Image (cartoon, rainbow, N blue to C red; front, side, top):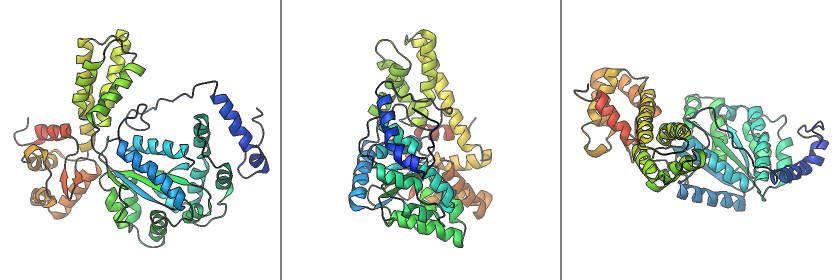
Length: 407
């Protein structure tokens, strides 16, 4: 294929040859496997082996179809503490939407103020479309996609970019708690973002447009501050721990498919799963050393190797907790842990009961600042109008390291 031909957006050459290019990619995909690139970071990104979140994904598939049928859309909020798998779930949703004919664009909060950046992000989604074509997606409207590529030059606002496009569109916003920076502004910039989010949220873009925003515990408040307080049924999601069977399935896939483990992996799978509390970040904290041990042993799952995996995985968990609290002073953590350790079986606590001791120690303004920081860092999570530490093992670590008579 002549790759020197002009593939510039909006050119006649592109319009004439795009479908042929897609057919070329399809034919190539039949003869070779599509590689999955291992991410440079171990903390975030696409899940190589995704299990669980079944009800959430089923609801999302239904939403995609409803948006198409009604030429409408809405916004979806995914809120959870760090390490719960928000980014992996976003990626999975993007994959599903792409297979159903949606253009999928990853966006940043600042792009809701920058029409050119938003347009470039939507336009670059053609690369995802090619991947989905490789995987056999059949619902792609090439006419709508060509329109998406050329539309929007000279538009004044990001909302114009959304409205002037054609075809179904999914916007993925990760770390959505950063919208709070915009929500604190007032004036024209603030209203521009409010207007755009409202149009998407209420399905008024004139095309199927869905926004999925995933973020930490303060994300819902950021949306409230931007005048969005209610979400459709099933569109406000709080991620928790994975069920035991899904945790085990992920670990087993990694051990057998990546680590080439020999024999029955049940003992390794069960003991590792027990230590992870179903938390995706913790799963990977144990998976990486497990892969290292299997490589050293030629795939043999020895008791000594498992002991080393559990020790290194625990160390990884602790480093994760330390990173969550590094912005706090020790005496501040002691104050928080002193309240938490009195909770029976990790039950939730009312805000006033948590901030009361903080106010006595540091004053009202500092107490609110510390409480907000705990939410932002995932030390606390809101649960039915009360607050708790989202990860059981993190609760144990906080209490043992900063509770009364610690050390």
